Image (cartoon, rainbow over all chains, first blue to last red; front, side):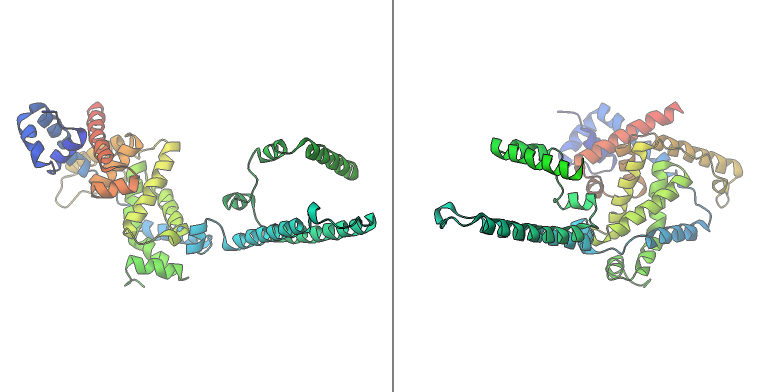
Amino acid sequence: MTHLTEAEIVDLIEGQLATERWRHAEQCAACRAQADALAAILPSTRGADVPEPSPLFWDHLSARIAEAIDAEPAPSRWRTILGVDAWHLAFATMALALVAGLTWQMVLKVEDPSRRGPVTAPVATDVATDADTDGFIDAWDAIEAAAMDLDWEDAQSIGIASRPGSAERMVGDLTAEERSELVRLIEEEMKRTGA
Amino acid sequence: MDQLDDGALVRACLSGRRKAFDVLVERHRRQIYQLCYRFVGNHEDASDLTQDVFVRAYRALGGFKGQSAVATWLYRIGVNVCLNRVSVKAPRVAAIDVLELVPGPGEPADQTLIRQETARRVRHAIARLPPKQRATLILRTYQDLPHEEIAGILGSSIGAVKANFFHALANLKKLLNEQ
């Protein structure tokens, strides 16, 4: 029969060994010796009490803890569940809703080639584009204001921050035409800002 | 508020009654301090760790679901705080404290000295055990927790807890013989 495992030796010391393993424990001197040697350590560990601190210590400790707790925000189930402050989450949600709404609006405004009507004057298109850009800037200002107090860690924790390498992956997905347009826009912006 | 049980104090605290937490601190500070002391072996670090345990408990109060006793939940936080600390800082075991030298009732002074020296040697040996073995030994021997509860606190299986306890005792025997 196999020797007792480490867990079974512990069970033997604590008087919890399964009955079917008792027969081995009774017959095997090696297992019994191992259990006896470890059991002999237990009384010395039990005598090692923690020294009692000064009677004044407990009140001092409570005061220290209370002071540290007072510096903490009040606990709430929502904060613990979400891992972020509720108002941070509200801002982030509002920002996401605005982005989603704006994107949807822009998608709706893209002309379907199959339904394209007679060619209109370029001026009209320019006016529409300017109006869209104004709308975009207004929406962006609103997002910026809403997210101003959202710190990086919270943005990451709720999954709206960009991940390392995501910009590279996005550029990698662009077509050659889109990439050259991106280069043109960047150069134009750099010229404009003097960067 | 002193009459409320631990669960009711947690609920009171979550509903904005901050003083309820003070009662929880008063109720559990000794056990948590003793747990921390056994991990680090000196009063200063044990006090700092005890404070840390209660601050973390306060922050996590909203997540307490009442599935385990508040004491067990605090032990779990305490063990994690202590394991984190001992992984970055080697324990500094205190020499015999003057307060320890007070003789027990009817105990001769030389017996007191021997008893306290033995206790110091054991604490010193425990402080040198690997962290998980130390945690298991402390929770089993001093806090008297069942293996199942220790497994829950340490996030291990019951078999692993028993194996850790076995190795803790074997290592303790070796360390005490070395001294």
